[in-house]
Amino acid sequence: MIEIVKLTKTFGTRTLWSGVTVNADRGRMLALVGPSGSGKSTLLNCVGLLDSPTAGEIRHEGADITRFGRQEARRFRRDTLGYLFQNYALIDNATVADNLEVSLSTRRARREKSGARIAEALERVGLAGREKERVHRLSGGEQQRVALARLLVKKPSLVLADEPTGALDHANATAVVDILREMSDAGCAVVIATHDDRVRDRCDSVFAVHEKSL
Ligand SMILES: Nc1ncnc2c1ncn2[C@@H]1O[C@H](COP(=O)(O)OP(=O)(O)OP(=O)(O)O)[C@@H](O)[C@H]1O
Image 1 (cartoon, rainbow, N blue to C red):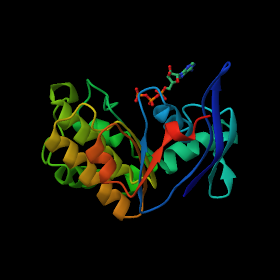
Image 2 (cartoon, rainbow, N blue to C red):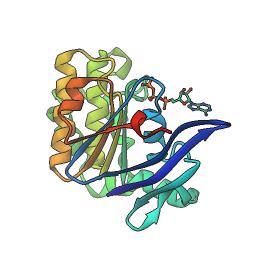
Image 3 (spheres, rainbow, N blue to C red):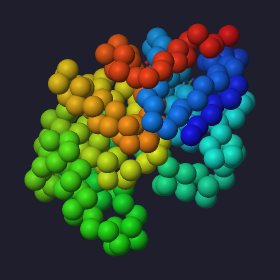
Image 4 (cartoon, rainbow, N blue to C red):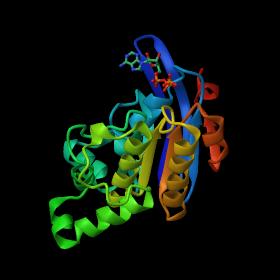
């Protein structure tokens, strides 16, 4: 799915990591671990095209995504990528349903019954019937489950999760990882930057970012 090959990131004279080579495969969950500041988020952001590496390649379907122009990057984000952040990255003042609809392109939404898809995703994350509620009124755990429902609606083939359980209690963290596991079992490649040993232990492979630094 994604091949990261000899990736390096430097800021001025500081090398964050170099020679990073690791794959994210469909049907598997990869944990990115390392101490605070070791560059887990930066690596995830390079794969998500939110940041650029200094050297190396990130290959997807024969292309090096680090060389994508604006159009290709937009298509990659739209068609392939799903992101899950610690701070949920939802539209606070909008309803649950509005937050889920943004992940449907209008053409697709017209073609399919978006209402039914949204209801199904909300049911799956334990928020059945909560479409009309405003996101800022929900608890942190509920907001992260809305963000997960948004991924379930979008059905990306690659999910990048940055500390997705960092602000959650044990029950909500377990629920989040359960759903990521389900997406992975359905063929998605899942990459999770995490400090949480319980999350790490539920992944199929572990990549220690700090051990690849020079
Ligand atoms: N644009 C930038 N310019 C300079 N330094 C940066 C830039 N972006 C990130 N850094 C530095 O790179 C380091 C790695 O940050 P990053 O957030 O990737 O680490 P992390 O492993 O995810 O940390 P944490 O576990 O605390 O979230 C930090 O020291 C950060 O200050």
